[in-house]
Length: 331
Image 1: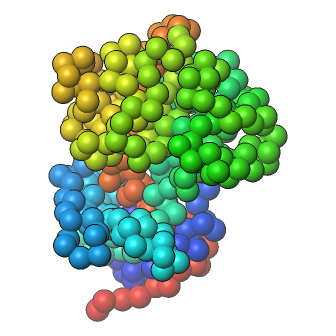
Image 2: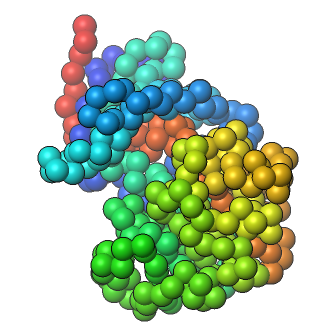
Image 3: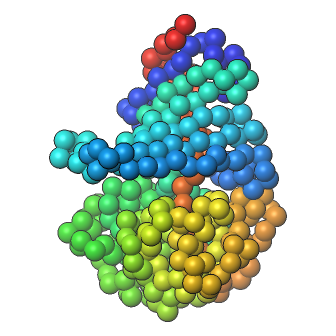
């Protein structure tokens, strides 16, 4: 984004256009770059606002921030409406507002639903690229909801996997993952959580659980785990003892210890804030990341506003370049 954009009006980029213009590779690069900028101190997230609004059982809030390196300023507004599924809508709804950092004028409105799924998958795939063993062959998927297929597709581009093992509390949902595995030419097996830990070289957890689904002693040396579902106080996907065994990385340390997977291990005194490393430090070459084939690495993906702004900025730029989206002016 630059100051010239505001003279071109506000580009409105709908969900359908987001799906047309931005690829998984675009999202990977955008998220990787913003994690690196965060670790250098060139980008920062503002405090998150999240409230129960007292209507429709909805949670609503804002994530915002500024990437000084990429000159991206804005916010994502939205939340969770549990009754939407019955209306034919997705329960999570969000919109990204981008502003010209030179003038403060609104430059783009971008649909945030597809991009949220894309950026979350990009986040775990960045962690796999920088922390997983290069010879990883078996991908373990814990969870088979809407987000899981985005995770599987993105992860498959980072390693030469030959098999997917999966577990979900509702096994009738596993065919969703199997269909993607079949499409990618990967063998697929539904397994127990214990067997998943015994087979997988890389594990992605993407659930809305409030209790540990994967226990520390099920995980083999050398495994990389991306915990992507815990983004709220009280949520939990893995045994806190696993974080004590692992080298722990995250998108943002402040969120990791307060609303991320690390909240439980920190509360129990198993690890401290100083034991958690921003993955951007690995991207920048300031931290070794994985330092042995036997190390267990864990990425606590809490989801930060800068991820949303990064991918939305790319979508807005590509939409402009391709003459897509509607351009409007507020005066």
